[in-house]
Length: 102
Image (cartoon, rainbow, N blue to C red; front, side, top):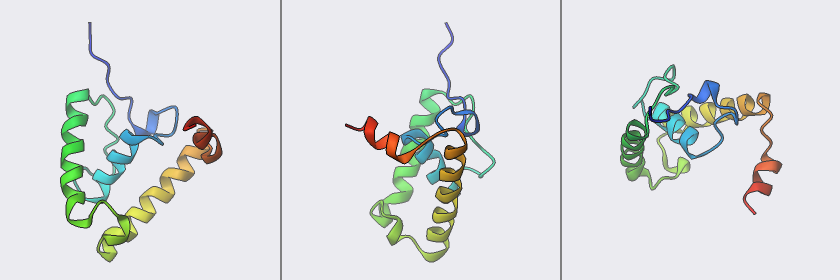
């Protein structure tokens, strides 16, 4: 039986507003992945490896966008703003997401 794979940010029904989507966007910020790579077909093993790389990239900045150098901070803001806009086109709502947390 084939192992499940990630559909990719562009095909994610929730608009990728979850930890996997955030990790992929963070990989874009740090240049670990090109912004054209949406990780479609990504296996659990591949995504776990990417998670480790992203965590290492964040380490010098305390995992805080406010601690990023200006260029990376601006790139982070742009990528995440675009992600919010995209997720809204998929029907994602911040209010609904907060309700799901409770």
